[in-house]
Length: 326
Ligand code: DP6
Image (cartoon, rainbow, N blue to C red; front, side, top):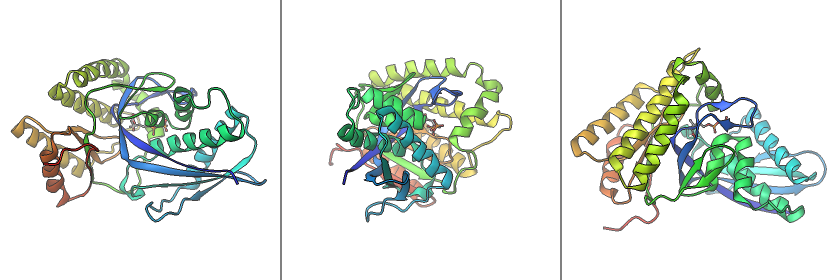
């Protein structure tokens, strides 16, 4: 029986993919830059089955969370598998089992990790049964993954990925092993999916100039991170997610992910930054939760923020891999 088990990480964009060229298989209107979240992963097990059709089931394992993939979600996932089968010329059918190692009820994006994991699992399986000369090329795999869900194309590279057009590529930056906090202020399912948000933002008057603003920030942030200018990086990252959320709020119809709780967390972050003139990079996705990234040498500050927010909110905190022990 042919079977593979593969996992892939999620990622958080610091320059956001928001707006896509309709009908292009998720080609973005602007480039994006992300940090890979190695601790937040989706596991996918693919098993060849006889006859019938492709199926999805929850992957049951003690260390993995139970997640509920809606009928629509399952169809989207299986459609991606079908695209991959067509690309490889594979006609066999498969059982797809998947699960995340992070709670699905905390509003964290799982489409990046899940589509990346499915792409990698399919590539591994299909290279065994119908090898293709490009079947292990990460750029080709990234491009294929993008067609399933845009942000997933960045999850194939670590710790930094830049995605300009067709596929993502690794970016070599000196800052590595950051500590990561997610303040989970809202754990219900969001009303507007990110795929819908991509469409709606184009109706905002602020969408004019958005591509240019994002491109300038992408260039400036790459430079700031390259030259260890943390203050500059933090300002750019902050401006960028605010810009994206303003697009949401000025779309027709307008919508918003930001809650009073998100605003409270953001204000607290701003206060602490003003006080210490240092702190984490702060960003938000198309959701209410607030992500914070700390340099490896900011372990103390990471702990302070974790303690501060955990009294009031659910906090997920992950230490950067190579954290120094003090
Ligand atoms: C706000 O990748 O979820 O997280 O391509 O339609 O699947 P689809 O959209 P998706 O969009 C993610 C948007 C974002 C920003 C980002 O990750 O860059």
